[in-house]
Each structure stands twice: as structure tokens, then as C-alpha cells.
Length: 321
Image 1 (tube, rainbow, N blue to C red):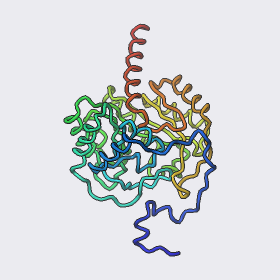
Image 2 (cartoon, rainbow, N blue to C red):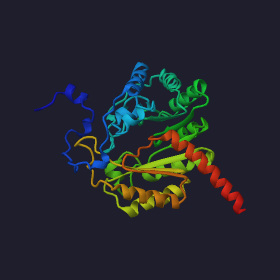
Image 3 (tube, rainbow, N blue to C red):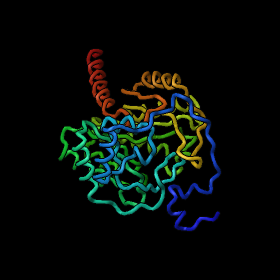
Image 4 (cartoon, rainbow, N blue to C red):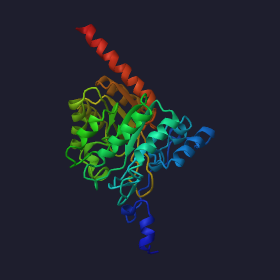
């Protein structure tokens, strides 16, 4: 049946509707999670809905939403729910975004205060349509959270600010506690997995954060199961360490719809443990590697691990000197 233009506009991924179906193998048992429910989950959802807060938990169909929201943890997604990129792995809607909601930073700050978060993760859609890629909006959100919740540590998960001169420097000057930007996959797969991005640009962005402010923790993550091989993963680890990235996350790619990139392989949990062991040996302060690992999963606990790991490293260097 031929769809009308109005029907096409309502489709979440209009750029994918004419692509052939990509059938992934059935999920193994270790990837099955409980459906989200419970009183605290409902309270968290009610609070976020009441303040009109968008979360990546919902928009990206995160498998950990039940676990996190039941603990009043949520990852806020700013600058709307429509992305200007069309990555083949992501379930966030693609299209032409609306203008920025200037009241959003303070609403996000209020939600952080009401949830009484000790640590918050703020991410966003890509906004290639904006002159600064949304840098100022990130800054305003960080500023408002600091005003209402001065004890809350802030982790940002940013887009790549590709061709947005000066944007990165402005965000760094707002001094988030953790600066996260995901490489997502190995360089060979960028043309099909992350076609709007550039691997070495993303890598240099993270390196520049450390060059400007060494006190900010840097973090990046990749998905596995997209068709990469082990040696390519090890090379990404080496590239990240060359950029002085502190924290690495590795998780299993899960296909959002049959029009998205297929799952080439489900990685065994033992392989994830091996990746973690090797990454720690390469010098990362913290490594989270498991089938259900996501960028912001257990972010609060991992931030405490980051701080302690830095202290341990400095103490070890002092003893060696």
C-alpha cells in the first residue's frame, strides 16, 4: 500500500522505510530483561512526564530502563527528540528538529533536584542545524543544575560538534565532571553504522578535552556485535588510550527494528570479561564491559570508581618516585 505524505511524516525513521529488512538472530538468555514496573518506576516516570523531560532511556529503547528508573536514575536528553543524523544503529527519531526550548535547562535542573540525584547524565540528539551544535544549551543546562543541585556531579554525553568551531571549548569551560562522547564502533564500520560522523574527529575531540582541562574525566564507548573483529576492538582501545580516555564502556548492540543494522553476532559474556581485562591492562581507569552495558548504566557508582582510581594512580606514582 502506498503511504501518504502525512503517514510518512509520522514514521520514526522515514529514511529507512525503503530499506530491506535486516533479520537478526534470536536473543540469547543472557540478554533477556524484566519488563519495567513498580511504584518507584512509576514515580520516576510521572515526575519526568510532569516536567516534560525527554530521556534517552525511552527514546533509544534502552534495555536497562526498568533497572534504572526503579532506582530513580534517568539520563536526560536535551534539545528535543528528533536527531539530524541517521545512524543505522540508533532508535532516536530522525528528521528536521524544532527550535530549542529555552525553558528546558531549568526544567532539567528541577528534575535533577526533585529526584535528588548525586550524579546525573545529560545527553542530546545531534543538532547539525544549529550554529554551535547545541553547545550553549549544554552550558545553560550545566549552569542551572549547578544552581539548584550544587552537590550533584554532572556527566555529559555530547554529539561530535562536527564543523562547529569553538563549540567544544565552550562546553569544556562549563566544567562538567565527566565528558563522554561515544565512538560507537570500529573505524571500518563507520560508513554503514555511523555515516554522518568521522572516527578520527571523534577521537581528537576527546583528546582535546584532556588537553584543555586534564581534571575532567573523559569517557567513551563502543557496541560490539556489529561485525567487528577482536583485533579491531583492541585497536580502538589503543586509540582511546592515545587520547588519554579514562573510562571505556563496551556493550552488546541490539537491533531496534528490522530496518536498522542487523546483529551480526551476540557476544558471549566471557568475551566481555576478556575485553574488560585487556582494557584495564591497557591503562583505562575504569572499564564497564557486559552485554547490557550502556554509556550511562550505573554512571553514579562508576563515577565514584573513577575518582578512587585516579587517587590510587596518583598514590602509586608517588610511591614509585
